[in-house]
Structure formats: structure tokens, C-alpha cells
Image (cartoon, rainbow, N blue to C red; front, top):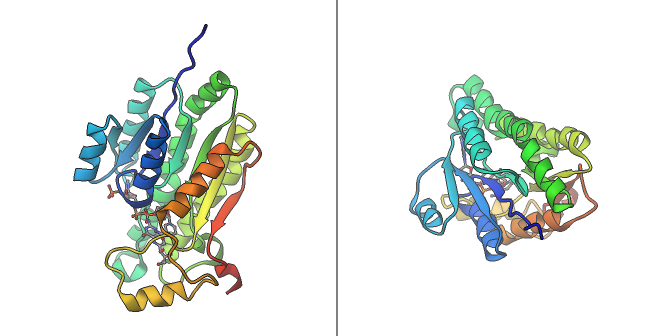
Length: 243
Ligand SMILES: NC(=O)C1=CN([C@@H]2O[C@H](COP(=O)(O)OP(=O)(O)OC[C@H]3O[C@@H](n4cnc5c(N)ncnc54)[C@H](OP(=O)(O)O)[C@@H]3O)[C@@H](O)[C@H]2O)C=CC1
Ligand SMILES: Nc1nc2c(c(=O)[nH]1)N=C([C@H](O)[C@@H](O)CO)CN2
């Protein structure tokens, strides 16, 4: 009897916060996981010790993305999913060179996911054929992709570009690969966010709460389990669109 192959999930930016929570969730389910990381941290070291294949890649550098792709192509015959979580939340206030900021936002949030999807779609299709079920691409976008942001203009525009990739790749890869997005408004604050900022951010939604990373994990799990969603965005925004 032919053995069923195990195809890993690829999570970009899997070394901390939401990416790490998704990694832990999938490992707990006995899934195989590969991550990309930028900063080598004790957490990445711990994941390596647990047998997670951790590949260093800086998405500001196209050649680094190419090396990530080549490493995956050499090691795996298929992929169960590609989860584009890596992101650089930079603001105009923190960047003097605005041209460089826009270039970096576009490279990290659009060009790198595009390069990964174009190169790795054959592995997603191979796994879908072998498993007899659709595989998945999931883009982590942002509420501001639709609404804009007055403090993260380049970031928001690049997340809108990422959201649009979901539509094109959903068309190109159906029915073997489902392609969807998750657009949080707030999942979890950054360590440096002060109380005043947090209170102001909480008031932007109807539900006025910081849901935490498990809200994002649940959305990823829903999309991986769904048989009938593609080209769509799960909005995790606490009713902010009505506030
Ligand atoms: N947190 C929230 O409330 C919200 C999150 N989102 C989206 O959800 C996703 C996860 O959010 P969150 O966990 O807070 O994200 P973080 O900003 O905490 O982490 C993002 C990850 O991306 C990686 N990364 C950053 N820059 C690069 C780069 N140049 N090349 C490769 N990797 C890079 C980081 O790697 P490293 O750690 O190695 O430096 C990190 O692992 C993101 O796409 C985010 O935009 C959207 C709205 C709200
Ligand atoms: N890459 C990241 N993107 C975003 C983050 C983050 O921490 N990393 N955080 C937000 C905030 O939640 C913001 O929406 C409200 O404070 C947005 N994107």
C-alpha cells in the first residue's frame, strides 16, 4: 500500500508572536513545519532543537528569498501550505528616506510573497495531487489594506498589494490550491506600546479588546480546514469597520 507522504507547512516569520503561535499549533497537531526567520533568537534555536527546519531569510533581499526557495526545492517534494506572515510594520515617522521605506515595504510584503508563490506553487500542486485535497496559500494582510493609514502609508499600500495577490493566485491555482487572506486590525500589541496608545487603539473597534495571537491561529486553522473558500479575506477586526 502506498504510504501517504507528509508535506510541511511553510510559515514565514515563524520565530515570534503570531508566526510562532501558528508553528506551535501545527506542531501540536503533528504537522510538519518549515519556517523562515530573520533574527536568530533563542526561540529559533529552540525550534531547531524540536526538529523544525528553520531557514534564515531577509525578505528585503531578493537573493535571500531565492536561496530560501532553492533550499526548500532541494529538500521537499511538496508543501501542505505557504503562510505569508513575515512583515515589517514601519511608519513614515520612523523613516527619513521615504523612497527607501516604500521600496522596503513593497519588497517584504509583495515582491517576496509573489516570488515565493510563483516558485513554490509547483510543490503546493504536487502535494494537492498526492493528498487528493486542496493545499493552501494564506496571506496575512491588515485592516488598513482597505481603509488606509495616516501613519503607515507605505505599509498599508503594500498590504493592499498583498491582498490583491490573493485574488490573482486564487484564480491561477484553483482548484488544487486555495488562496486566502487574513486581515487583522489588532491581534496583539508590541511590547513598547504604552497604555495611552493601547487605550486609543482598543477604542477603534466595537469590541474594544486585544484578542491575542490565538485569534489569528484560529483563522489560519479555519482556512486550512475549509473545503470551499478561496480568494477571500477573513477580517479579524472586532467590528472596527462599523465603529
Ligand atoms: N500584531 C497585530 O496586531 C497585527 C498583525 N498583523 C499582521 O499579522 C502578521 C503577524 O503579526 P505579528 O506577529 O505582530 O508580526 P511581528 O511584526 O511581530 O513579526 C513579523 C515577523 O516578520 C519577520 N520579518 C520582519 N521583517 C522581515 C524581513 N525583512 N525579512 C524576513 N522576515 C521579516 C520578523 O522576523 P524576526 O523576528 O526574525 O526579525 C517576525 O518574525 C503580520 O503580517 C502583521 O502585519 C496585521 C494587523 C495587526
Ligand atoms: N508586522 C506587524 N504588523 C502590524 C503590527 C505588528 O505588530 N507587526 N501591529 C499592528 C497593530 O495591531 C495596529 O494595527 C494597532 O496597534 C498592525 N500591523
